[in-house]
Image 1 (cartoon, protein in one colour):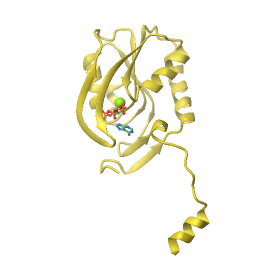
Image 2 (cartoon, protein in one colour):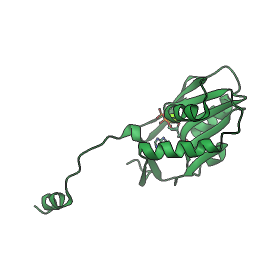
Image 3 (tube, protein in one colour):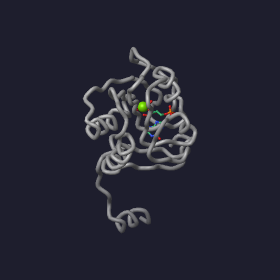
Length: 161
Ligand SMILES: O=P(O)(O)OC[C@H]1O[C@H](OP(=O)(O)OP(=O)(O)O)[C@H](O)[C@@H]1O
Ligand code: HPA
Ligand SMILES: [Mg+2]
């Protein structure tokens, strides 16, 4: 694990879906032109929000900043040609806030939401659902798979042999 992260917060598909729906309750009253997803992490939350709020117009800003758990230079691969006025900007999480700062500069008028927020990045979003500790790596369902787990007694036996 990268030295910045000492714990894991594992999110199942079901948990993510429930969290996104919960966030949508707070977005119901907003008059939105459409959604801008921050790729790639914002794509699935954006699709779920679009379904709940009956939004069909979806655009992207395409940004890469991490290689696995290691933060790298920020690369903007695609932007949009407006200031975000009336648009909902969606990412999966805000961590250090580097990505959030960049998208805020590109889209200063957008309403920015994430599902999860860590303390350093939290002030940069307009709304989020769940706060997660700064030293915690959020493990998303799209990065995991269902795997066989050996019974405890067998694991114990092979450990003592
Ligand atoms: O607050 P920060 O420290 O900038 O980190 C948050 C960003 O990092 C992740 O994206 P990543 O660059 O890993 O790309 P991905 O969305 O394609 O996984 C995540 O989806 C956020 O966009
Ligand atoms: O905690 C995290 N989980 C997944 N992707 C991330 N990108 C930055 N921080 C994280
Ligand atoms: Mg991302």
